[in-house]
Length: 354
Image (cartoon, rainbow, N blue to C red):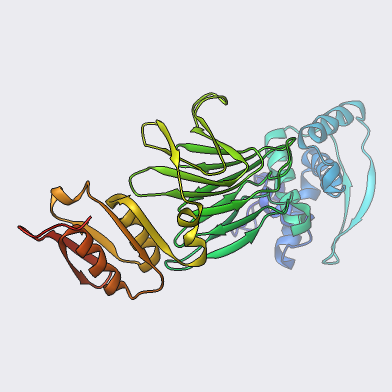
């Protein structure tokens, strides 16, 4: 049987089976002309009708109970055990009635294809497995901060142009999040379900804590502990490596995995949560990263002598041009902005403020 037109001299049993047309017929979706051709072919090919019947019975069972391989094994076994043909009447949704008298077929491979098509055509959206749970992602735009409360009650303030990814299994046995940019974490402590923040190559692990995390374009991650304690280590290191930081400590991990610790000012390191930018002997990598996140302006340093400079300054809501002017004065440099790009050039012979 085929969908193509044939001459009157071609008999139905001389045509190959059109399994897609048979599947549409069994699903009640055949046009009238196609249904007539299927009926004629089935009447002329009793060798194949038995298999179609068995597959139709399997496909109309509740889909949650259908196992394709076992259904085919069952069909084969029952056909071998029942050489005598059964007769029954089937009514399709298009009103077509046909009678079946089946014996053992020989096209199991084609039958498997028919079975799959029938199951797919009769599936409804509720038949499909629920989509796998995906991670939650929270993000902020340039100059924007956001406050997030996690399912366990932990509180996060997300800095500008930053992203927090919460694992799909958060709270199951562990609590893991991933941060790009700046975040302030007030963690609900649960010793049975450790809380950790992954930032690039660094891992910050909670030991009952309020802490702030900053990451800059130079791949340095900085953690300032407000209360409690955390462990700062490389994500590919042993759980007991790195350094434990307590309230009042500040730690940083460089791109090579080395961790350094030193005292800090809680007020300065958490100032960004209230909209203030505080730089205390800050590297140009950190300054450039914060200017981009807060103002959307990328600094291009053309003089290599400025790359390793540090500055000290505080900003709260000043226009970007004023911010750049103050940074330039700190560096003894000229900063020229065009749109979202600014070029930093050294003022030769000028006295550099520090």
